[in-house]
Length: 95
Image 1 (tube, rainbow, N blue to C red):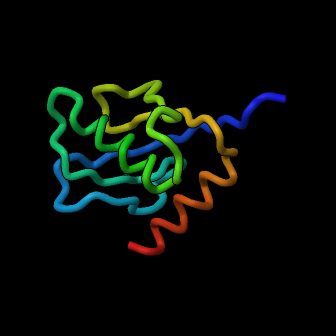
Image 2 (image 1 turned 90 degrees about the vertical axis):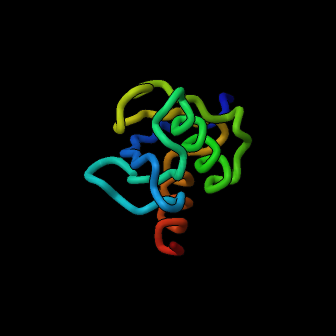
């Protein structure tokens, strides 16, 4: 049996006042990070935020598309899409 794997679509706002999951943005999740979009710092901040929000290890997340774009795709090992969606929705409600 293979471990669950999820794919998340994100819309990222770099250099925000504070980091967090905002909510839905079309078929993606809108997230804000305080790191600027310089030298991959915002990408690192996005992955750190997702790891904390989803309660997974940073190594379970991989940025697979959108390295220089606000629209990104992240793959996640160890959670189903449904569990990831539920945790992101909970985080967005609690902001």
